[in-house]
Image 1 (cartoon, chains in turn green, brown):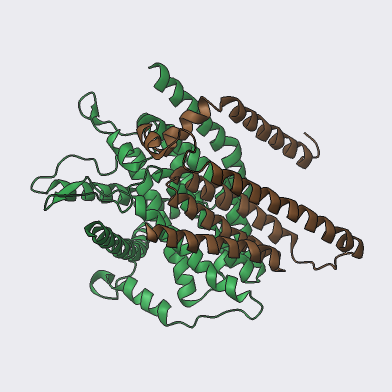
Image 2: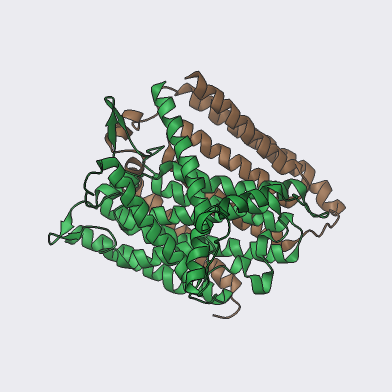
Length: 339
Length: 173
């Protein structure tokens, strides 16, 4: 029974944590992009605009949920839920820090320590596309359908590249468990360079970052919602909380991808000890720091690069990234066998 | 243990409901969505059997890729509602009933036959799988030792299908 309550507490902490961080991600994005465009960004609500996410949330909650007359009502209302739930479910397997002991009980900082964690995350991200397709089809709007079609083709294509780019790290660790993948990155090269996968798997890392941006439909690969040609893409007909749920799902997916990148390529919660900080919290701090690097990278890209053309995006995936990913697996296998 | 059985009944009922509704509803997009319900619940049943790897692959490959392509095709075809020709209907119904009955006989046969051997289902017991280092390792070992030839033949078959599809889709190569 104690196990049950510990898991319940973990789930509640994780749920609250992810949603809070996600809310402030919007604030962070607006501030970063504003800075890069020589603006100030949100600064009216609360001190330096810190209450802005709360105000936005309240605004979206109080708006009228509008269903188009010719829409398929059930599919239309179910779509945001199906986008949001898989995004949250992914977090069940993310480890945030090393195991620690409280009152003689060993507690791990992960909700479900399963041995297929990495492909579980890939599976959940692939299920998330249903929300987008259903929204596009259910809205009965040509822009929404175009956005949904683009999105599903893009997500299916880049999912392959995403999965293949991670196989190198799986081969190094010899396991699909995220904890084992982190443990395989302990130690250093020549005394001070951390033994993180980003060094031997630099090709895999680059491929992962690129396909992750496409997989989460972010700029410069945000063709499903390209404002200038599709109005807003698949969620053009959504208002109020339905729209908020798509928004939440997109930002949670960004966080997820950052977590996977930190765990698979940057050693997860591994990092030098910070003075006067206990080991588990030390791990969490490093994990969050590494994740925020990737989050910043997302915003940086968004305000730097123009949007790709759709055919360029697809041929980049199938003709460049997939062969490179396969080559990376081959080389990693040869090195692992003979070196 | 009772919780497990309750969960199994829930997932099984949901899977069956999805399957029945999939063939019962008129709208093809709704059909695919009910198929999604069935697939996800089958994956949940694999989890109940501790077959995490198979469960995740079920979600990743079937619901995440194949069913999305189904949905894609159904959406692209649009919703032209053509009346079904009388010839199709008069031939289709008896054939469908015959094939359906054959399937029922097969399924019942498999269930009856496997009930006889229940209790000793080969050497891949939970203990053996745990000793091999988990689901993924045990399955990998099996695929690349005992079942190497069928595994490779299946992959060649898929390759042939992929090459054929590309050949058919491209008008000039």
